[in-house]
Length: 98
Image (cartoon, rainbow, N blue to C red):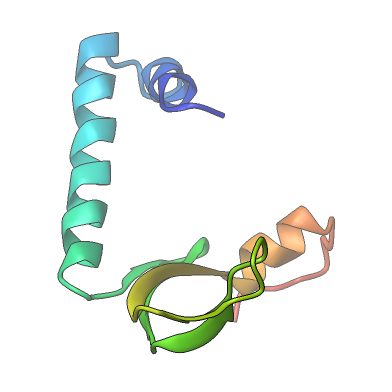
């Protein structure tokens, strides 16, 4: 699913014009992006949690030469689905909200 598909679904489901739907989707994504850039987590009830984690520097290897190199520390984005989303994906209809 692309951003255009999401805009289309919002427009159809909520009865908004496409321009309004586009602005809404862009606003939500901008808020999520800005929040993650500051290092905060984004928790969406019934969906999951986006979190930025710090990875330390580590030893790696150049696969072409076999030379040992040090990889720089970096921040990575992780996503942990909620139990409700996990159950829906796996077709578990007996899962009750906690």
